[in-house]
Length: 342
Image (cartoon, rainbow, N blue to C red; front, side, top):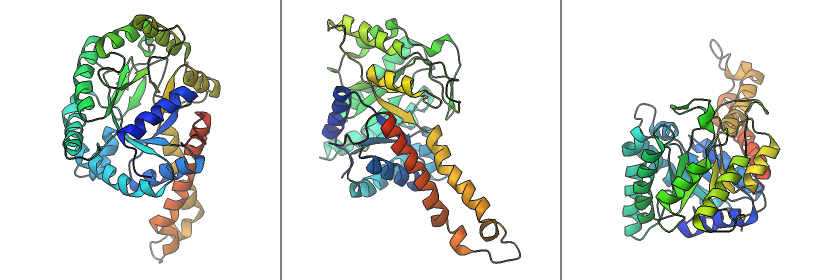
């Protein structure tokens, strides 16, 4: 199918919320990891979200070029061609963009999408993330308000983060302290600043102990009930029933989360969960196994000819893609999106 139109993306998000499931949002940094993610979603019978971070976008432009915008547009153009061969809907997203990179990443991409939409086309990306976790809340929401207006004009969904995700991802560092937990006051401030959809649709990453990086199950102290409290506070502010879920929530920093924590987060309104660390490992582990298992053909080439069939990047690349695709299927099953393709 073609990359999701804004209307299809809105339907994806609405179905997830109504059906109490979430889409894995898989970070990619190459054509191979993109293809692996696409296969994983197709194998799971799940629609999905594929995204690039600032570092991933730089890498896609060429390691000596490091242009986030050209890398992102190249990724989107490639994805547009290959995704239509898979029987699921795929939305494209840009991940964590801090304040100092807005002018070199999100703002020019929104401008490019606006121009494309005015010409009768669809946006390059279906959603973009503004990561204001490193600035004071009022400034975070002020910038979010400005970006939401730009996103609405481009027919794009904005993702924001209110609270702090611990650990490090692409240079965005969050301390592991009490700021990892969003408050009901954060939820109310967000509603007051951005509205509840009338000013443009947005996704909200509220934090409940999330930490980026590699952690064993149980080591990350998540408190999913914070999401329930935030939804209740927002519902009260909007005059809705106590069991309403005004926010479209996003789950960041999910590595090491227990299945019951993921399930509870989805119950409380999470419809998108970022997956990066786990899929990176799932991609790289088969490559390491291939290289060690085929040492004579791949690595022991000096003084000999080696075995081209073993060091051909397509040979080990297929193994890597299969490993990552399988991990995407696992994510779809954990988030209940498997088999939910419309």
